[in-house]
Image (cartoon, rainbow, N blue to C red):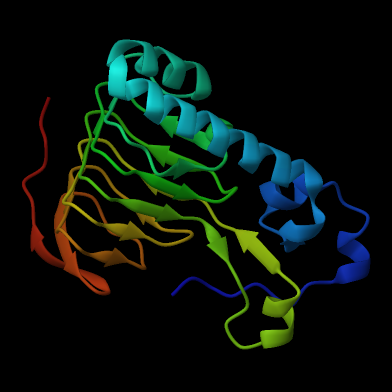
Length: 206
């Protein structure tokens, strides 16, 4: 599992801007951060409207989605409906990547998906962490986010879950239903809960 952050230094954190806390992977309390709440609520509303629009006009829905995702390549293909993308500006998607329906991305951590990827339906990418052993801190809503990075030429089967701080290399296949808790090296196939490498893959030669 990812290395646990030290317990929050509340006095020190009070002096930091919330966006700097997020960028630094520091603890913050979402329930006390109206700026973050506003981003998430507006994103949810826009995603719902786009999903509804897609029922009648897929092309216009795609144009609206492109406006929502400024860091996605123009030729990225994302199928509707989308479950959630809480922080659209924190998602980067490379050229020619295909993402099937019901994508869910939580929360404020950076999520990078490389080029030429195939992401199956119902995939979930989670960047937030809560305290594993201190219920008081969980009750008070303390969390921190760690980035998720997915390389080029990756293929995820359906219902793959990726946890905070995970880095997945290039040319990686993740079996359907897997839960990825640790980094996966390039040119491998991984599967299971937790996912583990089960096969080496031939390297891609351009």
